[in-house]
Image (cartoon, rainbow, N blue to C red):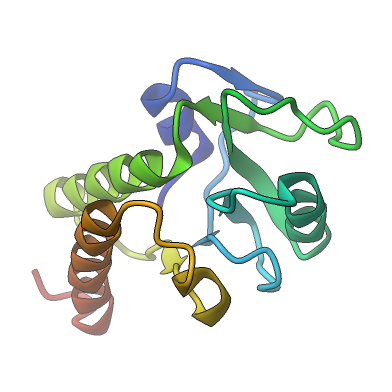
Amino acid sequence: MLSNQDMWTLFEEAYGFNHENFEFEEVITDPKIVTKRGLYISIEQEKRDEFLKQALYNGAVAAVWPKNEKLPLFLPNHFPVFVVKDPLPALNQILEFYLKKIEENGYDTMTKFKLFTNEVKSMKQNDQTVEQIKMIARKLATYEKGRGKR
């Protein structure tokens, strides 16, 4: 599974709690998805604060946030926020890292990636990056379906 320690390794700039290792059950881009131990990646360009609050309310335990945006004041101090130049390429980086991790180490339980739901599909900032992300996500889904086979 993808862990918060993996995220601390991937991204230099981060805020929040880093003393306990925990795993993300899901990675989401739609804040309306109810998640359990979810990592929310803010790829919207408008209403980011509102969407982050909604993701937090729906079970997100950490977030990826753009560097050029102020962090909302409502965030708890312990809530990990990984600050990146652009969240969409960061999502791609996370997927590539995670795919390599499961190919090298195998898996018992996998983090589920719930990306680009209907609402978010209209938000194609960079079609090439989105297609690359979808390709990696399909490969991860294949691993999940073939559980135990490598």
